[in-house]
Image (cartoon, rainbow, N blue to C red; front, side, top):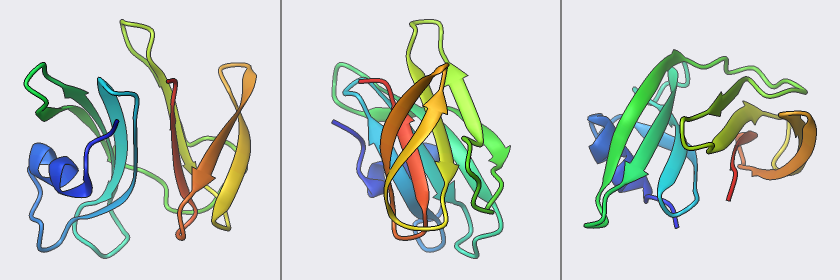
Amino acid sequence: MKPTAAEVITAGGWSPRYARVLVVEGNGTRALALVDTNGDGREINENRYWREESGSWHSGSSSGSVPSRPATHPFGFWRDEQGVVSAYGRTATAGPVTVEVDDRLIEAVATEGGWWVWLRP
């Protein structure tokens, strides 16, 4: 289970008129999303979310701008205090992608724009 694009935007505090969720992945209690905060492709934020017992998603933290160019390695890697591991990046094309994360190969699916997010289930 992961938050919807609307839940990501609401919890992140962005305007639904401008913000665009590029990709989101979740494991039921945690989620990671990449958000184009003003809709022009120039400021991409990495946001982490957690889900409360009530089912509501909340933004735990947000990074600054994420690089928008495609690369062959993850742009970001994160491990929280509970051991949840996640990574994100961008490829030149949509579809399955295999990258090395935390010394092991993982598989993710890139969106039409090439963005991908992986969160340990």
